[in-house]
Image 1 (cartoon, one colour):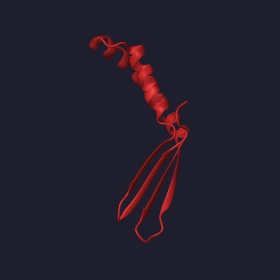
Image 2 (cartoon, rainbow, N blue to C red; image 1 turned 120 degrees about the vertical axis):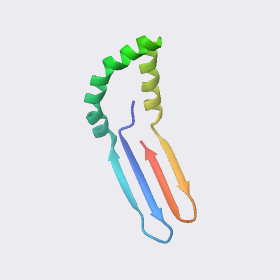
Image 3 (spheres, helix red, strand yellow; image 1 turned 135 degrees about the vertical axis):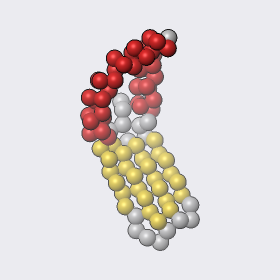
Image 4 (cartoon, rainbow, N blue to C red; image 1 turned 120 degrees about the horizontal axis):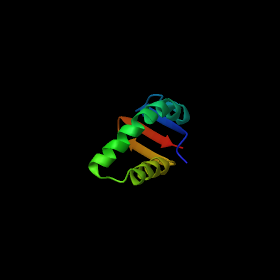
Length: 86
């Protein structure tokens, strides 16, 4: 299953930070028309480059699905940034 939400937490040293919640479901729905338009073009490009289109789409889906429960933390003396994809 692809990730459906993400949160970004940002804080500067000795200051209050903020958390930004991003509903990825809406992002996927907004990108769906673009994907549908590009689908035939990518299939033609795969034929031209002699790449298996089904394997390429399966790999892209696996990469998207593996993003779930990803946690990225960057912390130094000045700023703390945390990105959690759920």
